[in-house]
Image (tube, rainbow, N blue to C red; front, side, top):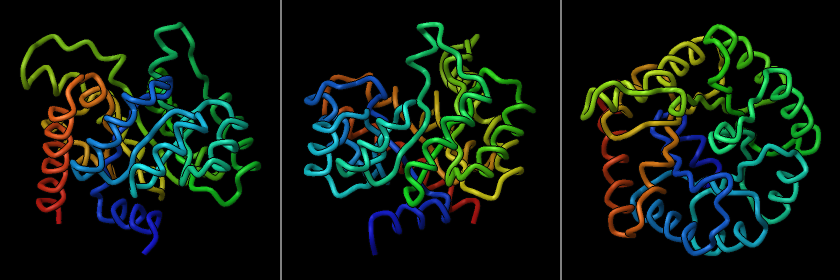
Amino acid sequence: MTTLNQLRQTLTHRQALKIISGLQNFDSQFVAMVVEAATLGGATFVDIAADRNLIRQTKAQTNLPVCVSAIAPEKLVEAVDAGADLVEIGNYDSFYTQGRIFSGLEVIALTKATRNLLPETLLSVTVPHTLPLDQQVTLAEELVACGADIIQTEGGTSSNPLHSGILGLIEKAAPTLAAAHAISRAVSVPVLCASGLTDVTIPMAIAAGASGVGVGSAVNQLKDQIAMIAVVRSLKESLNSASVILR
């Protein structure tokens, strides 16, 4: 079974775990740490920045499928040429801090351009959380019509928890959980719930209708390799327990 077939199978079984190093993280040593943690911790696939050397390094390091994120279609073409297994239009969080907002029309245009350039490549597209929820659902439907194979949700950066502890973790994840619930009921493709998730909220994402989850900051904000591996394992255990409960 190929790595992409394995990925599709985990999405079907609602057990996919993507570990995200960061769309603008080009530190090869640090990305290697994140990828190693994902591999040893039991993740399904990894998501890295669009850089040829980074892609080649990651492909040599792990047997996990490698997803490459960018907001420029030509960079995604270069990524596939360098060995990327699938591509992602999204992981916009780093741009929001710069005041960069993505409209529905822009995301549709990026999706169409990418699909035209890469007609056979597995394509994931993130729906911007800056849109009202009903518009997120409509956009997701349009993106699938344009050729998106996976829809990813987000929302962690728009959430400002009022409490600490477990309640705060749930508050942090609420926007992306709401999007996963609404979008998963409107589209026929897998929905990957991402942004602000932890082992506490992953089961909620699966219960909401997600086929898998994407986690970045819970792992890539750490500086210690052992701690990274421990977190990925905890995320994987949380995901597995959620999938068992829902069977």
